[in-house]
Image 1 (tube, rainbow, N blue to C red):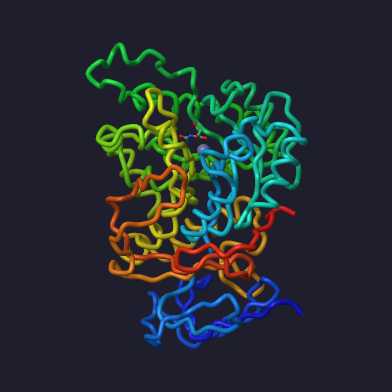
Image 2: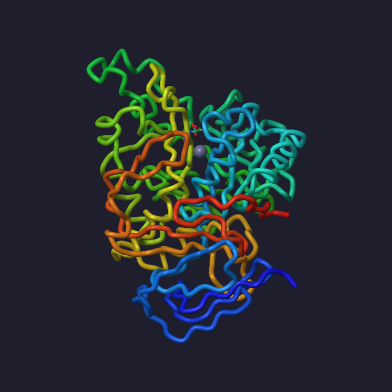
Length: 451
Ligand code: NCD
Ligand code: ZN
């Protein structure tokens, strides 16, 4: 008999996007029993004002105020280990994940050294097995002539713009060779051959804030055209599932919609910074908001937001890409925004305020990523699923304005101007209490999701 945990007076967001109040029983890491007595289309008011006090030894709690949502899936993170742990590292990055309500991360392969071989993949797996506080899956980086990703990988990542020491893969022929060899491909869709490498000369008035000008929209358009050509040339039976990573433009939204209408197995990911910010914010705040792909125009931001609301975007990831504060302050700052610890609070706030529906919330925060990557028993609260749970509270007061302890080593809160209407109080990973009110519980380990 494994561990058993009972939550009385629980209010959870069910698979039907309704809130149910009742009893939840967790056994052997999974949801063993769900007995709802009432349901509502919004979080139910607390049955008791008692709140809850969680002690590590507790086997039974009264959920009282607050509500329970599925632990979030962040399908796009860069935890920088092995090779650049000073920027984040697995233990710290997954502590930040817990703060954001995230119980599963899929980690990108652009490490130093990039994860391109079975040997490097296995060594990275061993590190995650030892250090990850949340469940995880890992990508392999696509290289010309590279082997098929193992069953234990989330898929391969193609960088059409150089994201590590390796050359980018840009032309349709090279893309096609990867497509023919793989089952699931995540693509950074900016063709670096379209970048302006000497743009400073043409825009001296901008000083150094030219990142978004160096990487013009034409690079995205060219990338999409090559992906489409490669997809068309690949025999239908051999085509992999495609994920367009971090969509940032009107063009990507239109392209994904058109490809889906043609029956293509294409998925669209975006990140909070693409629907909360535009290039104006980058120009105002500088290198801290320098990211690839760059923040774009107000029209792009509006199109991404529309697609988040109406279904054009399949899931929201963070592209958590931490860099040391000194690097960001330097003369040639690296690109990347580290946002994982605000993912749950942002998406929950949008749903609490009615800016997205709870159905959309479920899809964007984990259900669709779990379907896309084949994560068994994750991304939803149902009998038999893993007990990956985030305990949340609504209300602007709950979100608080108090100085917040930032967990990421990037040490910067990119969403300081966003109004938070919800916060995470506690997180369970496979039925283990992993995080409560800002404190990580030692000894809780996630597991690989593709075993
Ligand atoms: C990524 C990183 O730092 O690993 N940065 C980013 O801005 N998204 C790499 C990249 O995609 O360029
Ligand atoms: Zn990335």
